[in-house]
Each structure stands twice: as C-alpha cells, then as structure tokens.
Image 1 (tube, rainbow, N blue to C red):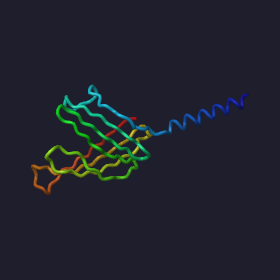
Image 2 (image 1 turned 30 degrees about the vertical axis):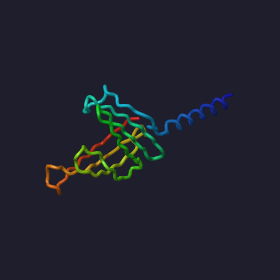
Image 3 (image 1 turned 45 degrees about the horizontal axis):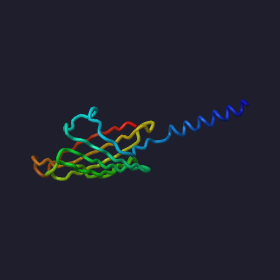
Image 4 (image 1 turned 180 degrees about the vertical axis):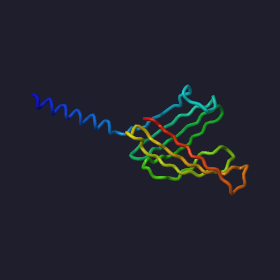
Length: 140
C-alpha cells in the first residue's frame, strides 16, 4: 500500500512539473480594457487576434475609431534573435525601419519584446534620424 501511495505521489509530482514547464499560449481574441488603458484617444478601441505556434506569434490588431477602422498585421518571433520589421507610422510620415527581438521571461511566465525603431524626422535634414527603444513586457 505504501509503495502504491509513493508511486502515485511521484506520478502527480511529474505531472505538476510538466504543467508548470508549459509556456503560456496567447492565442485568442483580446479586446482592450479601457479602464486599464492610458495614453490612447478616448474614442479608440483595439482588438487583437493572436495566433501562436512554436516560437512565433502572428498578431492582427484592429484599431477602431469613429469613421476610421484599420488593421495592422505583425509577426513576433521569440527565438531571442533580432528580426527586421516594419513599424506602423502616422499618416503622411516617411516609412520607418525596425528591429525586434523577443525572449521568454524567467519562468516562462510571459514574453519580453524589445523593439528598436529608426524613423526620419520630417523637421530635420533628411540624413538625420531618431532612434527609440521600447521594451514591452506582456505578463502571462
């Protein structure tokens, strides 16, 4: 009886460890929570549709405002390597260039995404550029 109890306990421990090692999957449809959001126009709504497979995530962001709706598609690779991407820029602005890397946070509870964007400032000479680095932390 004692041996059966120990085997059952060992089996449950292995199962719990296997579940704890599972990375979060962010797949699904996510709607912006207006009460927890800031720095956004008051009439804007965002809906994300996320498809996550292996070490990449496809993100489709629908941005909805009165008389204006647009969709932005993006891919995030969380292999720790730097990948080029095209950042979204405001209307009538020159295109920007970006590099992004993403890695799992300690304990694989979420992702750490680092974007570096280079864009021309239309008020500066054309050979000058500005660089901005933004870290996004998405808890699991």
